[in-house]
Length: 161
Image 1 (cartoon, helix red, strand yellow):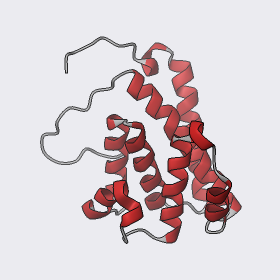
Image 2 (spheres, one colour):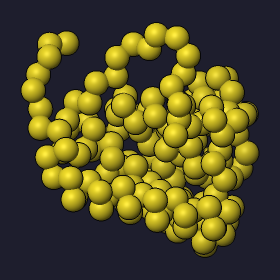
Image 3 (cartoon, one colour):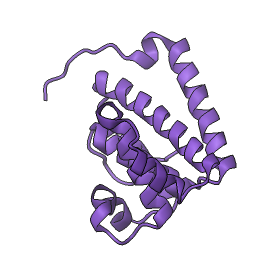
């Protein structure tokens, strides 16, 4: 990969990025108040970032997933969650909803997914998870468009905070 100069959106229009950060913080608070724990939140955010192809956000959210207690095996299973038995029904609902938000341009949120996920999560959890997914999709687009670098790591996992 050759080095390429790209506009760094988070630096070039700082007020817009600060607003997105504030939005993300608000959404995180709504999720916590609705009962979305850090584990389920990070599972959904890792998966959305994987599907969007955002290596930068995958790294950030894998680090946070580890901090939330996910094992390497569980993180590895996110990409193949439909064939894996390591996730709870609630986590599987979050993964399914994450896929719908990434591919929302294809079918929106199909009625069968809405009904299935709504039968597992409360309305408040559904709303909170939806806002988390709106937020991560925005961040994914910023970092993908800017080709944010993901260099090899030397040593331990970075601080997820």
